[in-house]
Image (cartoon, rainbow, N blue to C red; front, side, top):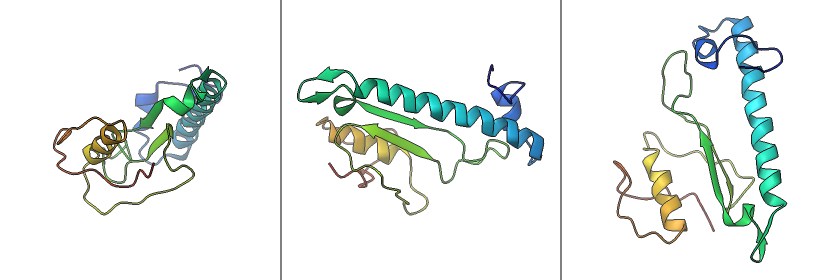
Length: 130
């Protein structure tokens, strides 16, 4: 990975074992990812499409399959949803345990895709207010 302040691969650094020097390098990589995401979203927002921008007509989802890759925990997964006509600038905390599949079912329903389930999900998450 070619990120200032970080040497080594992301995967190697993600197994940081709470070591401050590795956490600092991992933070550099994750900040770079979010900086690039911000630029990508800004670029989409500058492209006219229909009655708005390409971002208005796109759903962008970014997240991780681990909340703490060093421990391989998959609880409390941070997930960002951008674009579309979602309620933005909101932080939602859902009851545990809730399958992430419920969020994906919500996304399908938001786009008028009549799916009864997604993976192991049987009900939408219910946090995406259009």
